[in-house]
Image 1: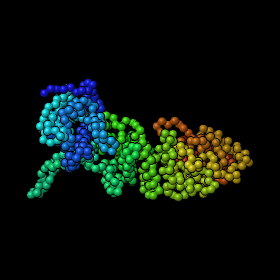
Image 2: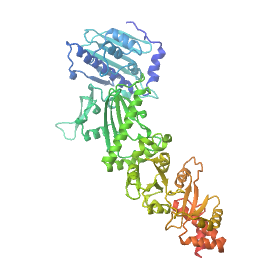
Image 3: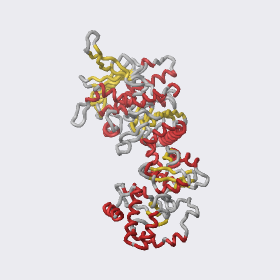
Image 4: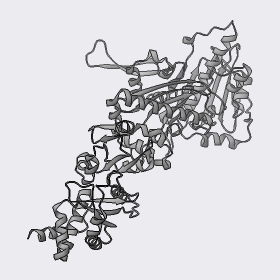
Length: 625
């Protein structure tokens, strides 16, 4: 028996296949099962054109047989088998695909799926085996052959006896090392786990002899272990069934089986596309936020299958970041895979699928908001922040996609409202979409700055999350209506009567310039306020950076010390205003005291820290005595 050399470029090529191409050793079983599935497919395709052949699906299967005593793992199929020449060409020439050649020879085109493309998957067996033996008998042949290899040194082929058509691949599993345990590939539970993970939706039964504990018939509380043959894989994937066949319970069961989450999904999306690129997908919008969602450990992505074989557990390229909460899977036969079938070539097909999926998710969320508002609000409490991040990120690239999915609390409706709903309720004379920021709805409602806007009967959106104002600044406007903070310098609603007159400004010029000097470095201006009704004082901001934005930025690790241009506004109709005027004329020391007290009061109203609490309490004591 002659040892033959691999007809490849070099020994190094096989070593690279074994050690470099595959990132996880366990995929060897996926590759060998996929090859077995191809072999059965080939009989099926032959039967389509050869009347002498009949294809009875129940007669075709794949069997996985671990043998701990002999340290072997056998993958047996009832497929088309290989002749001596095919063993030479398909296994003796690295990176020659027998499946690809079969498709060309038989003119099999789109719509008929044979998994193998590159002819390298078989060599993944050497990641876990010292010796690989292939015993095969081809359809139409009485003679079987045994192919055997110890690795890159070469292989042997010799005649062999085999009663049935098909192929057996026998792996002599490697001994354990300090770094690797190969015993796991002989363990029943581990093999079942790998089959379920990667090959659950192979279209033919994958069988194993499974040990089960069964109560003894004649003995109470006694058990016996018996072995029975079980089919490990599901075979028919849910996504290839008609939607009319499936119930909500079926989708929820699949969600739990795939461990997408422990909650009940708010919505599922079943997609079947048969166009330029063909794919099926089942997507889920979860109810609850994962515990690690806003941490570095969270990994977005959908499961990616090619013809029912798992290629990637988390394909992040299929989801934009702003929809990273979506769970589910995609299966396509049109993807361009690399030779290990583990990673995708980043190509047009993947981008088309991702674009279509994003559009489907958005449409589903809009329908949910429109038709099942309670469910949408439940979803939004968990993932609304992520949508706002999506508006803000990438310099606002995605704001048009996401703006109609946003909700904010309404001052008039006392519930969450969309921007479209807000605009539909705007008064005829209202120029802006008004918003106020704070720690809670209750605190915002008490802000002095809201008084004039509320007095006009205008609706105010309440912002309570740190991302809110940043997202709105990126939006700038909605349906040609600009956003305006109730704390901005110019609210755009003061009529001529409400604006400070020239006489008022002239009369109080000395007072405000003195107060501004007292608060030097703390405020950029002190002025009369027409927005205040009952409150004596408030802080507003001139410029793009609001006081709330300053708070957010100052809490960040890379704090750049960005400050809002704060303006102290005084209510001229409040009693304290006359006290300020009197102190300007009669007691400059008291003016200094009152000014600092009012400034610190304004800080407290805004939820900002007082720079010197001891001084503040001493000032209060001075007023009291």
